[in-house]
Image 1 (cartoon, rainbow over the protein chains, first blue to last red):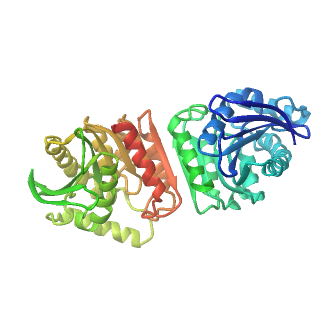
Image 2: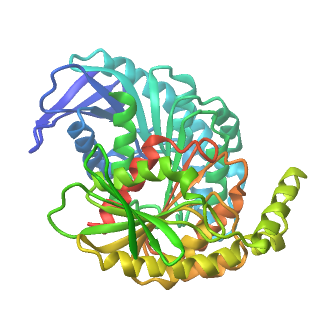
Image 3: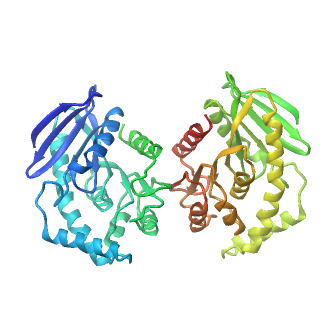
Length: 243
Length: 243
């Protein structure tokens, strides 16, 4: 892991850019911490530069709760090399959405499964590097982003002990099978009127999770209309499980 | 309204029994309050004596947040006169549940609709009397109990400005029509594994509510297994809307 930039935000949070091989990322740590801070991995849909304001806001909130937060760029997004197959899948998705019909499972599979396969090892490598830094300890939470990545991480990465998932993206059928193997506490956020989201599929996925503690918070509003209090609920979920 | 008993609980909360005509009730007020306290009406399934421990716990929590809380006995429950029709409907429901089949809409209608018709004017009369007492102001919230009563109250009683509903009881079809006319902020609690509850019906009812702000909190567990943090979420909902 190579640190590429460092700045102190106005609320004292230390923001550091890094690269891990070809993968850029950002780490935020609380201004003052007596003990190594728990870490929350911040998921997103890809495109660190575009997502930065929202990620930084989530990270400051983590820091206010005493947590470090980190994120990495997704494969084939932002400044990373493109993939012809991923571009094709995105174009096919766009066409299907514009046509107004349901989106073929086959397109969703082509769009999401390679992304999960490529991204998850990168997030795990980032976790190795982040947990080796002074000031960052466990436990680790995962929050938001592409839900299929969160599900896979929850299944395969034992260092993640709680996950906040956003049921707002396409879910390949195989993810339902993985969901049954998730056992960590889950906090699932659903925007009830999310235009691009299949609400019944989100409810079915929530039902499939194997976790003893799972909570669904559904709110009126579209994909980007998550109410402020819902963000606060998610913070409390992590505070309950990572402190 | 006639006060029938008064005791100071160990946390300073003042608990007063009352009757309003033939209807017994309980009022809890915070030990110390600078201004008239907002009021939360505590719904329940009927049977004040049996429900007392849970109601008192909910009331203490309201008091800790600076709210008064009050409840009244439901028609044909507890020490109130029985109704032959209600007894028959309950017996028919029990038989239907024991037979393991779905419960006829006709039985649900006979069980719930007369209860709503009888109970709602009583709760409104209680509200008149309670708001006339010194130390109790507005705004007013309604919380829990038979969901069809909560829905009707939310529609017809303009003094209720926020409602926390528990999606854990039978819902007559006509309640869906009423739900569309609800416009106040709603916080709906659903126990995902509630044995005696139709989950899809609860989700459909949540969908039907006309409120711009509505939130569904679903948690793993059965009817009585509401996790502690879910109660805290509901308290925060009322704090947001009644303060």
